[in-house]
Length: 297
Ligand code: GUN
Image (cartoon, rainbow, N blue to C red; front, side, top):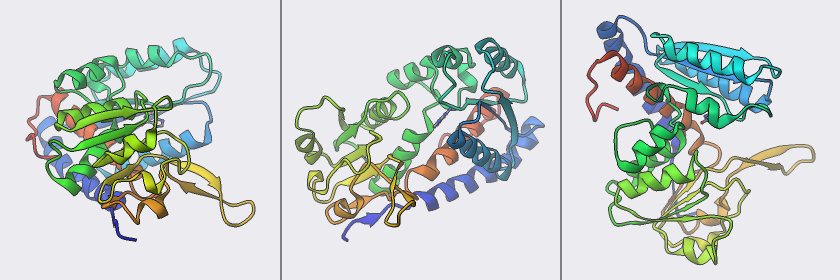
């Protein structure tokens, strides 16, 4: 194996501790802690795990965590009423409605009801628009975490060829916008892309966010490229009845050729919550009118 392993777990732990270090000064200036509200509708097991770890991480950072759980049977109107209540609550700086929502609830309507200045997920069209035109706003946590790892590894990204595989609103599109803002030459590839291997072979930076286990093969990777694997796919493990997590990239093969690569697990995954806390800290400063140095976090 020749590639350096990009340790997202360690980077995320460091980011979380830098966020936590900035909380006491905010508390002193604002007279309260930064507050994050997380809303979970229904009993989806994966979502329950995510919400629990967000709650724990928020408390560990010295912030206030407001958890709201609604039953699977909750109506859209009930959820919208809760979001409006959180919009109006001054102790809440960030609002996250855990996705996916149960059938019958219009996700776009729920997201568009969140105050854009509390939208620490960066999913509101106002924040997507701010990102597209280069204004201050909230950027979705996973792609922002990927960018932090890339900057840490590569420094200046200007002029590099970047290929983002996947065009979701949560990862692919904002990732492409972020890389464009770094002056990369950006290609967004997807399921209809012609000759995807040839497209990926041009890339200095590959961000794989398709949700298909080990789809990106080793011989698609340009020697020395930096590979960021956003995929988290559960597949059958070596022993019968056991499963394991793999990314969207054939890790073992790609690690022979890439210059650096994120593992799964322990790469991009831990970055999402760390960036969520970072976005919440930034939102708290903005809302309370407390200065935060641009390069503080
Ligand atoms: N479900 C899976 N990932 C996320 C995320 O980053 N934010 C929200 N709100 N829901 C999710």
